[in-house]
Length: 163
Image (cartoon, rainbow, N blue to C red):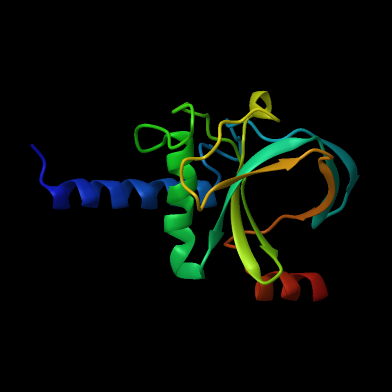
């Protein structure tokens, strides 16, 4: 049997690997993403950005308490979909990973989201963890999407917008 420390090290290593893959395009090889992505209509395309209208989606989200909470926050969402064993949702249903992982800033609070597969829109199982919640984005939305590498934060986003 594995010691508790060995299991913890394996779990942490797996979380870091999954987080790394998510930040660098989970499952992508030479720019091809194999995971399901939300459908959208491309309204405008420019060198640095696109304007997209997304269809309705259901997301699962969790708050982040600063940069140190990025990996644990990702882990909470990964456990909801069953990445680390039994899924932490009311149905114990394993849910496919999608792309991208979304990080937003709302009212000085940073939130991380997984967009759930299209088949789960409006009918996702309730999260077991009270720090994880479902978000129904019934109207989809209109978004300006800027392509860049690295992680997102308010200061770097503001700098990209003004430059």
